[in-house]
Each structure stands twice: as C-alpha cells, then as structure tokens.
Length: 214
Image (cartoon, rainbow, N blue to C red; front, top):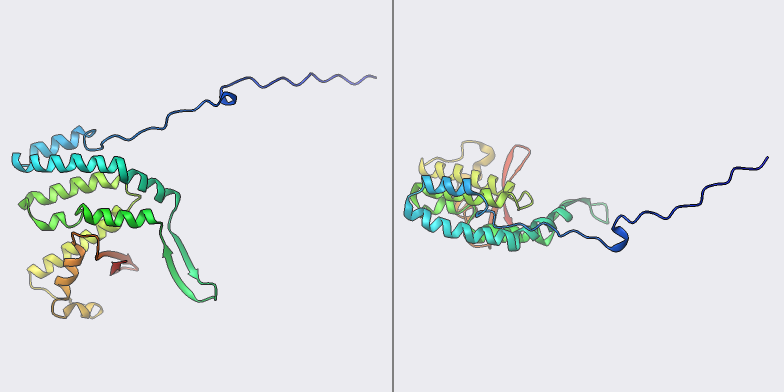
C-alpha cells in the first residue's frame, strides 16, 4: 500500500517583516505643555506674578524632561540596582550598586531644587505648590527616584518643625540629634540647592538614616 504523499511546503506569506518593516518610536513631548489641567490649576490658584515666573520655569523643566531626563529614566529601567550580599572572599558587604543614570538623576534633582524649593520660601506660601507641581512632572520620568526625594522632603519638614518649636530628640535612640547644631545641619543638607553635597533620607527597618550621597 502506497504511503500518502505530503503536500509540498508552501512559501511563507510576506507579512512585511521580510522587507524590513519598522515603526517609528513614540516621542515624548513637553509634559508640562501637554497637561492643560495642571496649567489651569496653577493659573487659577497662584497669584498672577508668581504664576508668570513658575510657568516659564515649568515649561523649561518640561523640555528638560523630554530631552534629558527621559533617556536617564530608560537607562535606569534597563539597568536596575544590584544588591551584593558577599564579596569574593565571603565577607558580608550588603552593597547596592546603581547605574550612572541613577546618580545623574540625583544631581538633576538637586540642580532643579526639587526638595529645596519648598524651603526657600521665595514665593511665600505658594512655594510648596510650585515644588509639588515640579515634583509631579519629575515623578513620571525618574525611574522612581522621586521615592527617596519624598522621604528626604518629609524628613526635612519634620526637622524644620522641630527646630521651630525648639524641640530636641526625645528618644535615646536619637540622642546624637541633641548635640548643638546637628538638627539644623541635617536640615540644611537635606534641602541643599547644589548637587554636592547632598543628603537623602533612607527608611530602613523603621529607622530613618541620613545618608550623604557620594
């Protein structure tokens, strides 16, 4: 009995891939100019002169997000932090390694005064609104760098309120904060304007650590 003959293989249909079809990558625009709700809110709630100045800076910052920060965000996503528990000799090191793009985001956050803006008070009570608007734009393209910035902002605010009330550390665990000038020095470094030096607050095991970033 003869075996049934197989049908000859058919050539694959041309679906475009064989001809090198490609798509244009999406391009991000100016996040501030493309957010009419944010612009409208600021225009409605800020004094006219304050809005005029803030509007110019946020438009500039939106362009920087598009031209520089978006690339850094992508680099951070492709190169996530790595935790090394032990070195080559078996010694416990617990070292976190981050990519250069993450470190650059640290510099930019200080250059743009993302934390310090709320403490300079150059726009009086409206300074906080301006700061949060800028932080809002930064959060969407910063590879979650806004997380340590938020902890830093919170730590600076708590210390600032404590200084205004003349308070000191109540717990023995924070007895070093009772030393003269320690709180004011930490607050100054937490809300620094220049990239170097810069402190940030790191929450670990329910403790707040103030870490100088190198």
